[in-house]
Image (cartoon, rainbow, N blue to C red):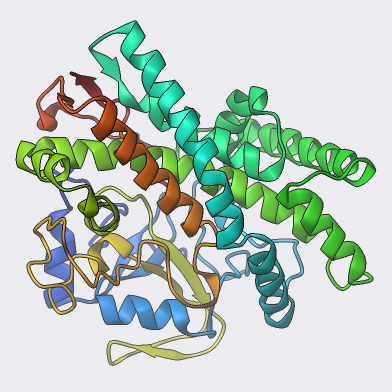
Length: 402
């Protein structure tokens, strides 16, 4: 991976605007569906951009999460592998499959449905605070970040007074270039110590929360399921569960307000809220890095044979705009159905928190439409700025008025 070629483009690609897709995606889908790229670390990988190919890679067990392999490309400029690393977990495919099944039983749609009234009440509270403070307001800091971290803390039985710590810890885990190695190592150590103390507290006094339930399940399995797997799951949910949804709230609202006819459609027909959320998830031009995979043996993608030791990056955003799969793929159609986008992944590693993310996004949209029907962007959409240096995509601010 260390042989650097001058003609290999740096990845992630630059985009013309905060809500606009990289022009490279369409070019690569047509001309080079498996393309060499250079990552923030300087290592090379292959980028897959077509819908069918991305889905194949995500569903194929040959493509693994073992990004700590000696010959794997380092995704980030730091040494730890960041949020993508399974390093040190010792999770083989059988353990992972068993764990996913058990977490799925604990993290049920029923649990998320039971949270919906509390999520809606918190959204109402945050929107209320925003309106009291007056326009213009930044939707990201007023609503986008506080709501998901509150929801994930509620799910895990964690005090949301620690949300500023979570924001910093997750930033370091999601860093490509934003933080130095010393900062990352210190934050990771703090995060791990926090989770160990949290697990001790939950074991001593179990509650009606996901961590207590997972610890109970782990205890019943007589060591087949280690406490470390519980902690890694909690860490993943805290990071992915609040950071990605927080960013998506800002992007979704910006996308809908960037063309006022979209907001008017939703005001006139609340039945469009659910498909509008799915379409915003599909059309997100700024989702961040994508999903990396590593192959320890030869595999074929798009009629190309990839050698063992190759790191493949799945461009979810590009796949979601593939007109081989989606009619008028570059158009935002609020009533699009079906909408089999890949935003939450596919196959054995698809996002465990997708039901919670969907519930939060739908609830936020409903509350904003009900409380602030005159909501609009306070700056032109082309002036919105992306968050930089992180694996996940987002907007620095979404200034709004009403």
